[in-house]
Image (cartoon, rainbow, N blue to C red):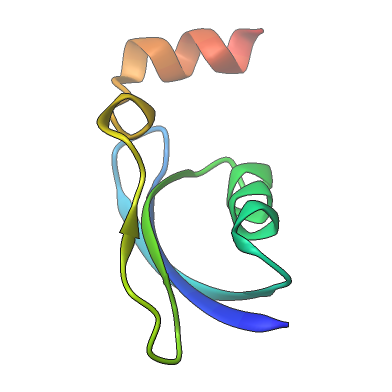
Length: 71
């Protein structure tokens, strides 16, 4: 398993930084999403390059977040 550090935002727009141990990037993103967070960027903790999500995946206003939570 690899260690990843990430930057995410919650539905109020608060920035949260943390680390997770995951097999791959998709598992990392799934774990972050399960916490109710939206990943802004992540990188492998030991020398990995920083990977950013496409702009369409990163931008989320509170109206969209609230609508998604209702569904």
